[in-house]
Length: 500
Ligand code: AHR
Image (tube, rainbow, N blue to C red; front, side, top):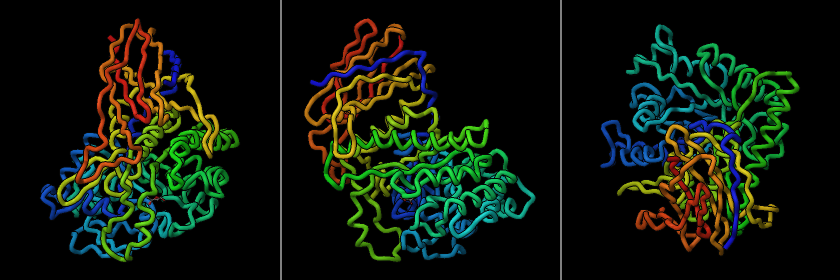
């Protein structure tokens, strides 16, 4: 049995969680849109062609914001192709994923779908092949009330009221040589500044995310962020971060240790933002939008064999296992513990494409990673308390001093609850965690949800959708405000505690 201790003080607070850190992402890629959220000929479709079964699961998670329409897709996308009568929309060669895009689902359908799914859009503009003009016209189409060319065009398409989309990404991964319209940091920074200026002139209430590096491993990481912010600091609100982890090496201890790397990545980007702030003598703080994060690797080999120029192929369809759920849980904990600066985060993606939700002709099901994501979204809103953690540690191939315990403590004053999120990364030993919460008064454990499986490679499939599913632990004790928790080996845990 491993032993760990959490030290918490109700006055030591990291910050309030912005609900948008539980966001996600739908790209025109693979079967995310077509067959994922939109499939008019499916028995699961509503009168608009939206799949009701996926909407139900998305509501179960409670996803506050969904990034759209890409991703790499957006860098060669003409938004005008996606509006107006469906039968007049052009079919295009889609360069990012080498498929055919028929534009049957577009901007207005997405806005309608988002309402039904109880979420709000985070739109990306194309800064690859296009620029200032297309971006400011798009804001006018979406947000301007009436009486101008683009607002009246929207109204002629049946949308009398503006969509009022308030969160926008200035392109996608513009540092990546794979991106159509890839740019140097100076080229992108200057374009982002001018585009942001024009977009905010159309609607001053919007918030803008500038592209940071597409990953920590990029050779331009750091320099990219500081150059881009040098140009556009005053006109943007967030800088983006992206990361995907893999276990190609089949080294599970090292794989789970990636939460240490993710935390370092966040701290480095914060430091870079604050370096530019200092240099500019600015009073403004740039926060982080971690708008792509997940595990992504299971589908890599299959995707190499895909035929080009089909429509909505099975692409990036990772089947997630138990250890992926543990890392996703650890990544959510890392986001929570950095909630003072990470204000937006998007699990990439939401349906069928590296996703918590999968669909087929017979229905929709929850992948293993669905559970930590859903739990964090439902229990993670509130004040994150600054926790001192005393945990046994291990060294892995890429990291040293990796705590066996990943944890975050969230106090929801409105509901009078405290929730402890915890991952026990040991594959052999259960862990006892003690936490003194006497300051909060009388406590009662409402629930201890656990996700674990004896096989780290266990998955959920269409045929066996509940192979990895949460259960409940009843061994915890409360003694005069002192909590003792038992975390099974290789488990994700959510302990919800009532303040009486
Ligand atoms: O989410 C899949 C892809 O990963 C996105 O299109 C791109 O932005 C990133 O490289």
